[in-house]
Length: 75
Image 1 (spheres, rainbow, N blue to C red):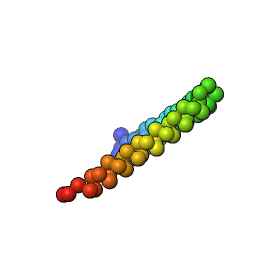
Image 2: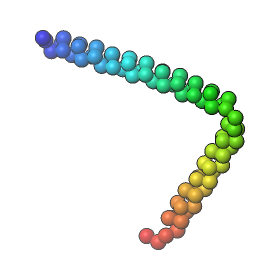
Image 3: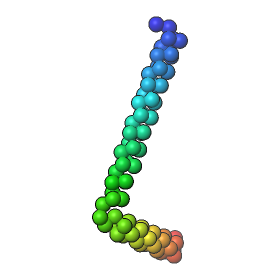
Image 4: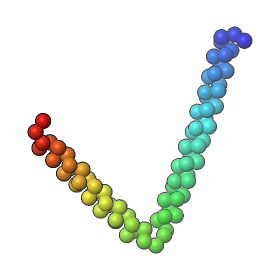
């Protein structure tokens, strides 16, 4: 087998792997969208979403407070 044919075979193999990965990503996206749409239909979705927002705000404030505290410490 020549170097050129080995290179061609490797390239074809890599192309097949990339195509497979793209297909898997598309399936995962469809699954994610479907799951999200299902969750939106469940009772309590709006309340849960609001709670997540509040949690994120709280975590960001805590992270900022820690960062501010670190910056105030003498080095």
